[in-house]
Length: 147
Image 1 (tube, rainbow, N blue to C red):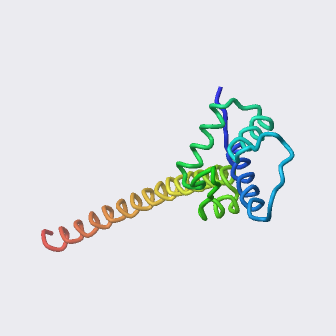
Image 2 (tube, one colour):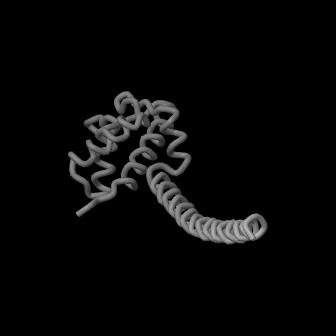
C-alpha cells in the first residue's frame, strides 16, 4: 500500500502559516489548564483530520524541515521559501507540475522520434538520388572518353 502525504504536508504548512499569523496578533488568554505548544496543536489537528499516527506526523514535520520550509516549530519560524512554496500550490501542485513536465517531455521525445524518421527517409532519398546521378555522370564520362 502506497500512501501519498502531499495533502497532509500542504495542510500542515498551511496551518503553521495560519498559526504564525495569529501568534503576533495580540495576547491570547488560555482557559485550559494545560497550554499547548504549536507542535502539540499541529499534531492533534493533523491526527484528527487525516487519522495519522504519531510517527507519520513526525515524519511529515521532518520533511518540512528537510525542505527548509519550516525552520523551527517551537518557537514557530517559517522560511520565506515555505511561504512562497505554499502560495505556489505546495506539494500537490508540485506533483501536478512534475506530471505535466513529464508529459511534455514525452511529447517532445515522440515528436523527435517522428521527425528523425522523416529526416532519415529524406536522407535516404537524397542518397539514392546522388547515387543515380553519380552513375549517370560516370556513364556519360565513360562514353565521352572511352568510345
